[in-house]
Length: 339
Image 1 (cartoon, rainbow, N blue to C red):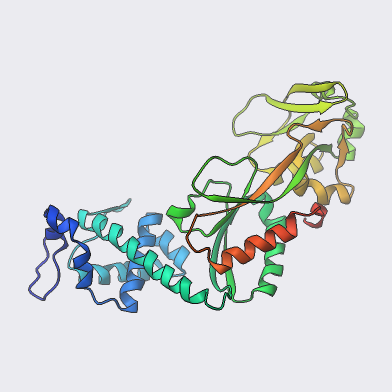
Image 2: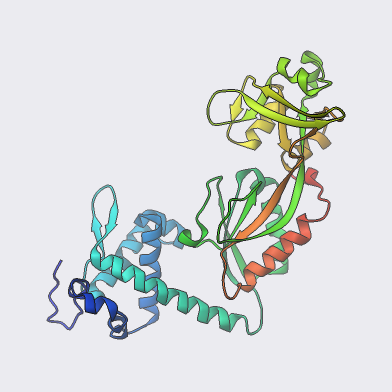
């Protein structure tokens, strides 16, 4: 990977080969003129490392893959070293690339903190807000919420990723996640923004055909649509007048997506146990009907959390949206508003 340094370029491979140079490698960056182009190159490089490809990095940065590739090539030329091993299937970092990523990440963090410190002088939220949210919440509730947020904070542009995958906020550069249910222990900050009651419901047509269950034990004779990724029985837990009860249920369909389970229930395929944010609209319109009123699922509610990386200075855009999320969803919410 040796690169001719006759033009005054720095040999990163030599830096990597010498342990003393590794310890003092910040001196290397002092030799690089920190222009806006070099910072942009660092950001592009870091995003390629995070996403694993030029095309994925381009989608996140709003650039064509060819533009990403060209910017990386220019960066490599300026540095006088190859940063990636390129194959038809994947990219991997060279030793120089690993060193550059480690140091560049620190520089970008300092640049971002400097920018944040300036932006906080007037406290006005602005910039791109990268957020991720579960699919079950996005279309019905979070997207309408974002319209109200934008009206109040027009200088903030939301970049929304809808996924049920547990996104690594730090690794993927995400500002905020809205997560459902119990959270795993982590170094992230989690703020409760609300909750929704869970309930059993089915379409009027299904109940007319199969009968209305009067107690959890009746569910054994019903088609229960369950949240699963593999075939098998699911356990539903309840609390009622006689105390707690546990019922094993199964049915004509299972899925790993709450909206599709709700749609299946509306179509008459069976009973579902879902939070109110997924079925409130259908209940209000008469498409679904709640049953087992004297029994409460255990747990009775599903909490919502705004989760974000721990930082010395919380960006105004993150603080603004979290405060508005609490304002919108912590009070008694009309979950029937979506749909």
